[in-house]
Image (cartoon, rainbow, N blue to C red; front, side, top):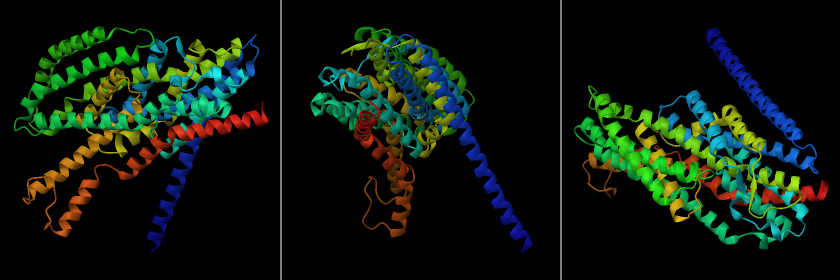
Length: 495
């Protein structure tokens, strides 16, 4: 009895100590984040000498830094999460690669100009008072950052671009009414809520089905791997080359579609020539089983995570700091640019460093959600997700569809998991000898049906599916409402 009581007391003490340690780590994280924002304040103050409205620039700089922290905590997980879930990268390795590649993408290929209003959502010339432009953009930026922060807290990866778009729309409506919004653009963005995840999921499922049919389900798996893995890796090289040309480098170089195609085909051929003998040597002496095949996908998956991070840093960071750049330009010149504005170097640095700090401090939570908690990933499944993400963005960009890289990546993960559910359930019924199609027989025993249903459902966690889907649907309207409220409060109590 005494031993049992002592054991319980020790268990409680361990729990208390663990909770206290976690609380202390949280305070440290928030302290570092506050130090970063304080440094942004100092930097913004140092570049406002001689400017008529320094307060706006300083406040906007801090809000932009807060936004960057939240992007790092939430959005970057989509690029490296699958590699972590597949155990191709450790959490530390994923964060290190993401920090280097995201910052490199933002600083090297982020460009020197950005559209004044994200995606042409509102027409600034319709504002009744030009002085409302800066407060409206500040409200939009803060609303987007607050929503991403909440989404990170509940464990839902959301689109940074959609959050900013919603904030800009809501601030525009609050300032000038519904007529200021370009509703045709908004309808396309609303359509992307469905287009993005569905395209990503379908393409990822098709690639996984191909891998299973041509490699996993073959009697000689190694022979299938030697034949098709070089093709898949070469396809990745070609697709990512085109992806970087179209998305990752678009702010500093815009090649013609023919050049992009030529680069993609050239990289495919070169990579295939290199990978075919490499895979043959690497697979020599391996056992003829699935575990051996997975080893062949680790290195390509790491490169995929790095390239996705670079493209994200180059493309989405500039979009995220677009309102900040617009605020700095308007506050400095006293005018509203209707097209594009320059991005000051310090603004890009705030975006790049803020994303890195946010990823390092708060990123692991969403990386675990994306890579581990939605569905179980191995290198082959994660590779299909990465390849699907790049292909979907290229197809959508070619067709002029406004899609979200976040929705695509997470949709691809769900696509892989749901395909496995369907395949597992179908295979289970076939193995029972009851029938040879995916339908359940009417006379199947109740216990067997329940067992199959449990097996079918456990491959994708419905809780995460519903949470993420709900977060996607409310991102734009919630950011819009929040931005409108913030602008109203600013006009009522500050301006």
